[in-house]
Image 1: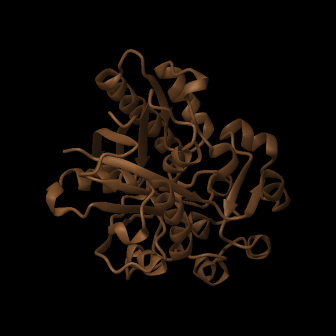
Image 2 (image 1 turned 120 degrees about the vertical axis):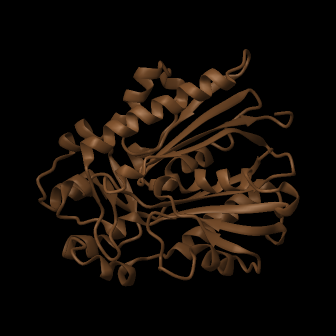
Image 3 (image 1 turned 180 degrees about the horizontal axis):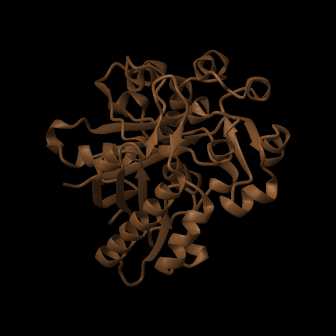
Length: 331
C-alpha cells in the first residue's frame, strides 16, 4: 500500500544543557570526555536549568511540575509547522497518532491532548515503541485499508526524556535532549515524498536492556545497546540501499540520533560519505523517537526531487525499523 509524506515539523525547547553545564554539576565528566565518547556538545531540555542544578532531578516525579512545556504544547508547535508545510488546513487532519518514550500521563493518550491543543475533534491514539514510535505508526498505517483511513493523518513524537534523567549519573546526563517531531501523512494523496520499504522487527528477549520505570529514571546497558544499534542500523541501511538505490538519485542516510560515535561507525561500515550523512545529535542530544524525524524536518527545504533518504531507527524493546523517503512528485 502507498504511503505519502506531505509535511514535517519540529520543536526544540530553548534551555540548553552545554557540556560546560554538566562539568559544573561535578559528576565526573568534562567537555573532552563527552566529545570523545558520544560526540555531543549540547542538548535542549524542557526543564529549568536551575531545577537541574539544584535537584539533579533525583525525584523525577517533580519534573512534571518543574517543566516549561508538556507534550501537548510541544506537539502542537511541531504539528503546526508540519501542517503549514503540507499546505493544508488543520481541519483536514482526520486522525492523530502519537508515540513517546516519556508520555505525559498513563492516560489519556498524548494524541488526545495534542489534538485538543490543536482544536481537533478526531480519532486519536498512542503507539508507544520508544525510539521507533514514528516508524511503528507508519508501519501500522501501511497495513490499514487506505479507503478506511482519513485523507490526512498527523503523527507526532513528543519526547521530554530529560524528565527521566538522573543528573548525578553522567552516563545518562551526557546523552539526552528533548525535542518533538510531527508529520502529515496520507495513504491516498500523493505528497512531496513517498515512503517505501517500511520495516519493523523486534527482539523481545532484550526488553530489559533499556528501561524507564514508571516515575523512575532512565536505565540502559550502554555497551550492549550500542553494539546492537550499530549492527541493526547498518543492516537496515544495506537493505534499503540494495533494494531501492537507483542511478541518477542520491541516497542519503539519517539514523537514530543516539550519539555521533555510533552513527559515524555505521557510516564507516556502510561506506556512507560524510556529505550524505545528516545528523543533529551533536547540538540537540539524543531526542529519542523525535531524533531522525527532526533531522529530516530541519532539512525540509534542502531535499530535492533527486533525493532518497534511508532512515533507520532502533529502540527499547528491543526494536529496529527502517524506511526510505523518495522525494519528488512522481516518486
